[in-house]
Image (cartoon, rainbow, N blue to C red; front, top):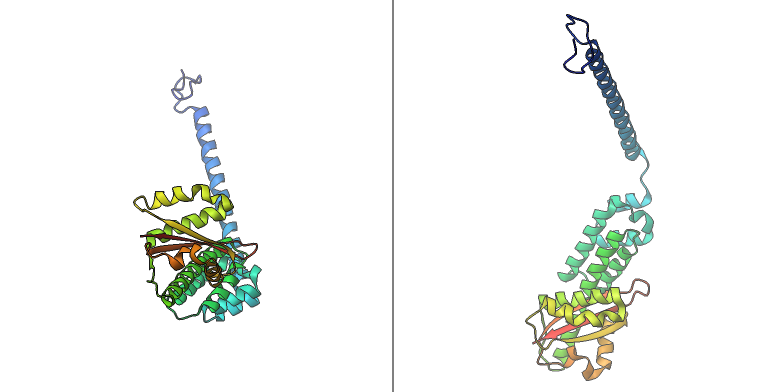
Length: 264
């Protein structure tokens, strides 16, 4: 007589296969042992989590953390980042700093804060030891510099009896793409600039690109443009009235390069 499960020879009239029965008992025992291990590990993890939470709760706060919690404005937060760049780089504070960068841009656009205050705060945020915060602060700073240059160009055109230019979002997006290409490829950006513009504004005609490289800020870019007289089209061109501006900042030197696109 053979067991129908394992095929082993059994004694006649055997009710249960002892081999299979032993195997099932062993499986049950192993399952119980694993269950005990899982419970023990879960309990250890819970205890370690409670210890870590207790340490975070009762350890004394750093000077940066205390002052950050007391800060009442985004500009105060930015100033703290300059004083504590490494502490400010902790991921625990990342969202707070990103919110500060967004608020600084909003206040500049709402004209509730001036350029100097805005640029100073963004420079301070760019010094934080956190790549995500630095990238966002630099993006906001580029937006601020582009808008300031646009305003300065229109002010100069008005003073010289010329019509104001109109900010065109698609043209601005193309200008930002060209600026990003320059940030990556340096002066080799020129080989791809026309293709990038055509891919973003396929129906555009007579687009002109004016550039100013390695200047301190938008004001300095305007000064250099004025020195170039008729070569700097944003100040003199009358046929092209729609404009968009992109900017790239060299982190090492802190200097800006501007890319001004104009179309009819």
